[in-house]
Length: 103
Image 1 (cartoon, rainbow, N blue to C red):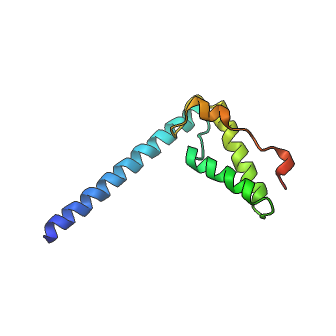
Image 2 (image 1 turned 90 degrees about the vertical axis):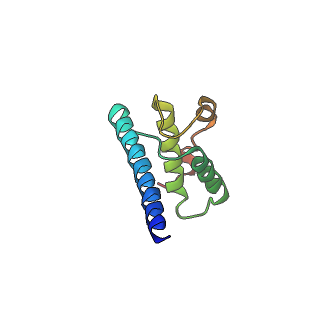
């Protein structure tokens, strides 16, 4: 029983390490080819936009707007993205703009 638990844990840990290294290698190749990669997944960027809209008085609002707009611009400029973005998703995003930033 103990031996099977040890083998199982090493197997799961090894698979997690393999997936992480494969993902990081893919990121490095994208950065080498394009200079940048998308910094947020589709879900994370939508959540960031929702947070920005819901918290206009937050002290981090300006930084959040900057990060959102930066990701949108990178998505428009790059040929390939790390996360699974559709062309329709990329086209649907708009930058929030300077009017909302405190920077």
